[in-house]
Image (cartoon, rainbow, N blue to C red; front, side):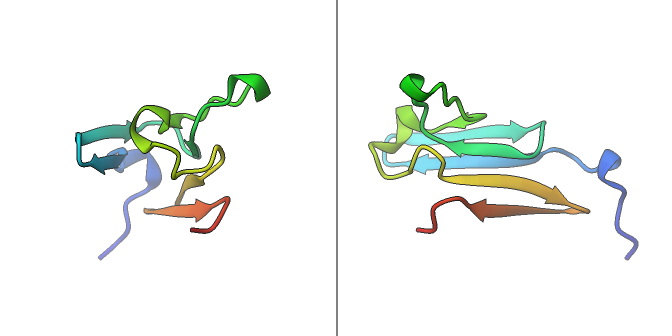
Length: 79
């Protein structure tokens, strides 16, 4: 198959699943930072996990990038 150019690909989705529920976010702008907000350091990631995470994700947890037709998660702080 011929890969589609990135402009014609549908937006990637980020899904958060917790015991309290499931939330989906379209990734309209990549790269997208994932983590917890930290107002004292003026850090506001595109996908803020502070309300869902209970302290497991770091403030700078990961970055999601598109590489051609693939979406890749890069860990800032490996699990």
